[in-house]
Length: 251
Image (cartoon, rainbow, N blue to C red; front, side):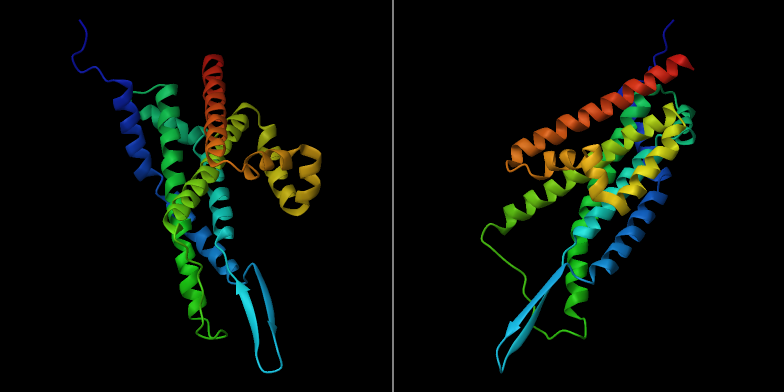
């Protein structure tokens, strides 16, 4: 006799996903802390220029939330690694689940984390503007560029930022699978990240990392950029899922 209360894959994934949204609340706090630190660092500005004559002089200071987005990409990368750890994955088996439902719910969580990171990073631009406006060392003059196509420009900018953050999440999830395969990656991955922070240019030339970054960053067509990101994330997540399935068979 078959049970009338048969649970579908969709129901299991939804239940696991909703549970993770509340159970992983600590990652949201870490996001806020990292972005606050990035905002403070951004107060130094990203550049300045000046000029004048005998009677008038001026200094222009340029501010940007780029550092906040960089910190957000780092955050989602680390979070995606953490949720692949054994302790986090074992929690999924408190439900009626399998490896596929666990991976799908994790991927959904990475998507939501990427959206949350994008929104909060974008809002941080206004935080920076407010802080700069009230800085005592500046006069009251304030300029923010506005154009007729500002709405579409902002939309594409936010969407682009989301894709950059999301691909970092996919990369983190794939790296997390490698860490599970061999303990060697537990040392290798942090060493590469820390080494890149200090010797970024040299490592880029040797490892080809610069070529990978340029593959996305130098793309002039927005549609092509989106296709590149979608295909890359699909490959990363599919590879992670395949690796975990092989590990499950061997165990």
